Length: 339
Ligand code: ADP
Ligand code: MG
Image (cartoon, rainbow, N blue to C red; front, side):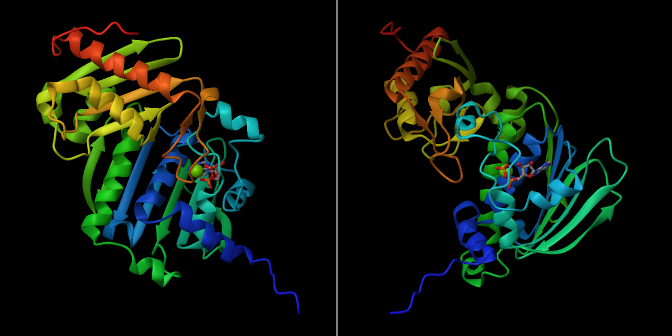
């Protein structure tokens, strides 16, 4: 029998890997916004056409890249953010896998302009389906601008799976909201089909929540603040009467990274106890800060799931913090001193 195993060519490997990180326009939006944040941007613009299917552009005023880095940034497993495996446990950046740009460039038409603040001239790079079509000096503003056109144009099966513009746009708004919520000190603007949908000025968490979710939330916000040796919990919960039958306004951030976690969600809902109906979802925006050594952020390609070294303790702290907060604001009938 002849040997039959072959190494996949890079562009094909990238396309396959892209499936894990980039499922829809919203995933590209998330990755590009996170890169802008990691680059230290204070102003970020997101410009979309047709719910990102035609165009996703992210413009930041962050630190920019050198011509060499501009090219390197599109290689798979190329990152400036970690050097050793241990770095994963002291991670301060949103990114670290070095996969997003390589994945996006494998399945779209990409144009990037980038300039470092101390340079007079920047770099223009055009890549389609992992192939560099052009790299040349260009006059551009300091920072970086990515234009992603026709996502999945070369993977028709994937493109066909995209939902309606309304639905894809909703996914984008969800990602945008999660990122913008965690960085109220950064200003964000979002344009869709030439109409400005959000103009978030810099402020604090409260002003950011109101800008993102509307004035309605203001009357109902109860501040949460708890500092323990294991973790710091801060943010807001909604008063019980604001609880909704539909999910959507529940946000956990671990060290400023949005995550989903059914177990911690349970800790919060049970703290509300009989104040809300069994099937209702309380409003919460909660930031949990703990030693990065105690969290594994590398369990899922999109990093929306994490592992804790001691979930039970996290659960207990969180539940008692919410109970105490409700009691402090005279919302719950009794105090619970079990912790
Ligand atoms: P990761 O964010 O995991 O490092 P990416 O593929 O998202 O991987 O990006 C690769 C590298 O490109 C980053 O490590 C960073 O050095 C650089 N980069 C990406 N986006 C930007 C940006 N907006 N500004 C400056 N540098 C960037
Ligand atoms: Mg990244």
